[in-house]
Image 1 (tube, rainbow, N blue to C red):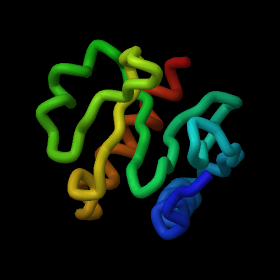
Image 2 (cartoon, rainbow, N blue to C red; image 1 turned 90 degrees about the vertical axis):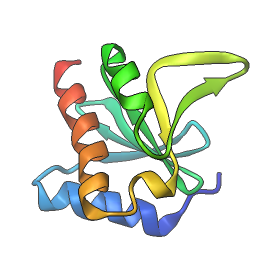
Image 3 (spheres, rainbow, N blue to C red; image 1 turned 180 degrees about the vertical axis):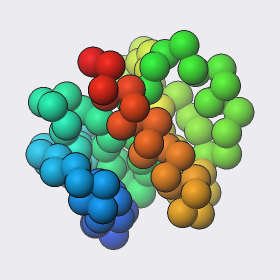
Image 4 (cartoon, rainbow, N blue to C red; image 1 turned 45 degrees about the vertical axis):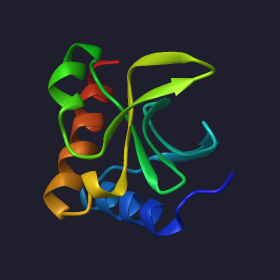
Length: 107
């Protein structure tokens, strides 16, 4: 399971700055950050794998770095990969992680 440790550290740091103590679990071929026993955000290779409200798919699909999550030929609704260009800036990184955190609260 290869994932970008620097990106994982960036996620850890951001969550801790916001008083969130996630559990970490290897899953989906990467490192998942679990909040309230639910996968919130994942570091997969050098991408973020985000979990969000599926009704937001169209609006998110136009964002830089977005790609749908497809496994075994099936698109997973409410999940996407975000390539590094999509979260290079602190503002974009915050957008994606906050998106996941907000959705996690509804689960």
